[in-house]
Image (cartoon, one colour):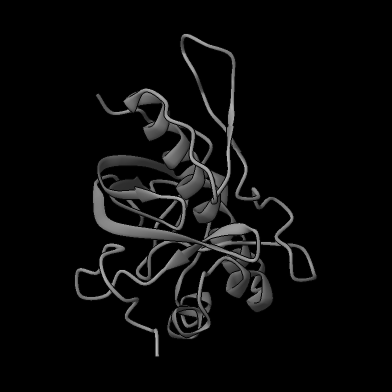
Length: 180
């Protein structure tokens, strides 16, 4: 069962990203503590260091919320032409550097208009989440549409989840492609 959250997320040619106000911490960035959306018990929390076991649907909703927030922040940074905010959403500097060109190439209409859905979870640990996701960027970016699927990775960085390199099929398995 696919859960679509309208918390607004969109994808462009480089994947997911972020937006902040001035400074190093994104204004809307969730810290690595995230509220679980429990259906049969009170809400619990999870951190990057300690994951709480939940039902499959609850965890998928939580993962979708993480990726949606990253995408909305990335699109807002592009819309604002805010390179610092854009870089702040990435888990590693090299991937941010490779992605920064999207600021000039993408015309964002409404950062909150896109929707992200998890199709498959490849990895879900306290230090890496890898998914195959579907984005609907209709109304979010110029030329956007429904049905853009891709692999997405999030890793903790400076207390928040950040977008990481998917590269040539890397899904949290083995050394990171940008590690020394």
